[in-house]
Image (cartoon, rainbow, N blue to C red; front, top):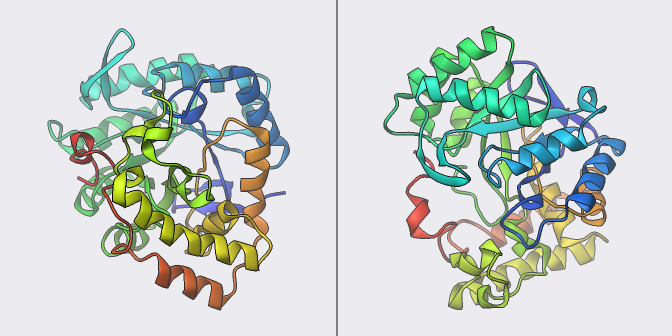
Length: 328
């Protein structure tokens, strides 16, 4: 069984690795609800109980999928979801974290998830039109009403985290963190550790790049996000492939897969870190969860650290059209 970890100082305890559910419904190829449901059930069987979704995934259908999959099993799961967008039908519009909208979003998520309580509720992206103090206050009221247990932020900067935490204790910050995305190490990670806030890294495998199976952007189908990812394009792909080769070499030396080495590196960064690799396939899930049993030695950790500092990775982590919404 997977070991457990405590995220932050508010009593949230989960499996050391979670399951990101977004790719079951969007972004990476054609959805397969049957296999995705089996993957969720297999995760529970293996002791992985931390599931990450959002109203934006689909939108809406990913929460519905997770709700159906957990029917009769809800008491075994820790469910995290997110609010923060306007919708016109099924089209996602602008950011909206006004308190009245948060309350509406929570009711919708509860209904789609088929539950009366959300374990962890994130603001999906910081809305500059709404003071973070108002957001934290609204979530605090929802927590007091018993509909949410813990408050989280996603892609928030250090000052935003501090301001929110003063109003309502923040249990978790979710942001991208992996061997090839280490932007938070200088400022954000020290702040959340000072405040006793846990870290949930999404895309801990670099959207598949660190697994050694990545291809150039133009080789992915139109419905795959990586077709438009700057790090998979042109010279960036070549440079990043050379860096990823180090992960493959380390993996070969310790009898593991590159994915397992990448996840184990994150787990070694601190007991307050719980990565959420995403997959819709049982075989990949089992491979990822085995990383919790992998111990990397000092030499292996030093080699990985030296090979993949932030200056080595080429290209921004998002297209410029959306990069401005991250880390605010």
